[in-house]
Length: 255
Image (cartoon, rainbow, N blue to C red; front, side, top):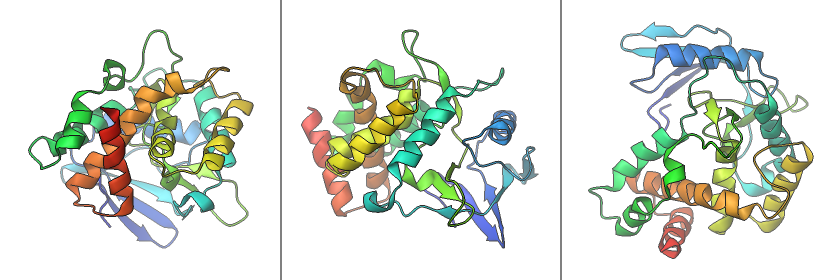
């Protein structure tokens, strides 16, 4: 199975083999694998040294049951507590910056020549802070870098939930891990009650990304970036469903 990012996944019994996207830095990947092996919030890899396959790199992971990525099936409180726990873990000395800004740049490039004026304009008008991993006036923590409900899984029905996929794991502003649910809530794709459960549980667990006051001024630039990213990916993959329509409509309102 090939993912939208260009990675390839092969399941062999209880083992998942992941061939990472072309251009993956093996040294940064090795640092991320070691960090996952030491984390209480992240799924531990079977091996902490990536294997070279041609010009690409492969890793091996335990197979997990992935959450159904529909709002009504997502354990929002558990997800929030996991993210808060990740954001409180120590940062490895050589941890690279998280990969959100790089992913945003790659995805925004998909609409430069496409018939997607609304998304292209929204991308061009994103504020400066979304093009960097962190800011001096914000917390700096471990960041998953590509968190959404599809990155949540567990070994069995009674096992605790865990986060997986470390391709974009790194250091930076933890608000990035809340960007996608915030953006989907703003686009009307995440119910108010799910969003409230998620943010309340994150704060109750001591998550450092949100202030005690109204969180939206902090979240808003990154929520916008997450909507643009998802809409641009939809353009690239020729999505024409209700989700894509809502994302494009949200991009239109940004103006």
